Image (cartoon, rainbow, N blue to C red):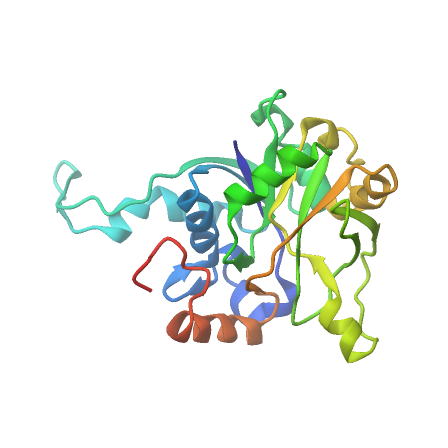
Length: 266
């Protein structure tokens, strides 16, 4: 199963970092946030990725093209440009890089990847700035059992990005609100969930995404049709949308890297 990672946004709320690099290359613990996300997926056996590129996408290509030399010791003969690597400390990722437009919205970016997807196989989608201690095999098993057009992962956030009203008996979304929720009692805030990424879609859902739209725009009609399931993640989740959150995530990496599920010694 392939995983689409949305890597095209400009990251306008963290200009301190994204003025010179794309948001997925902003570093956490000395590695791009994109690498952390890919490690989560690869840990569960999902190592085939399609990167939907946009803003400064060439830098993401260059990073991975130079990846082996960045991570390993090597000797270089400048006369014939011959390189001898002394170790091979690289992850086993299979990556397709696709330019999806500088100003394209997330739904449009996914639409432009259709030819790289298997028309007979479900696929996963996530944002290029969020991590979690999520069990992706459980997510996929849940999606298959629900047999709906799409499954999104619900998380309890520190901030509000898109409120979900969930029927906990059917595990399906009753409503999906794209606007931020900033009011409510403390009890409501504790019980509220948002879409945290880590989505699974059937090919049919791809055909429902309108031209030049956000991926979230397909969720309300799917919800109305009973075709949007919700996998409730009770663990930890963190996104990186501002420079303050970059600092917070680096603090987590030093003290409690909860998403570092690939390392049992963490």
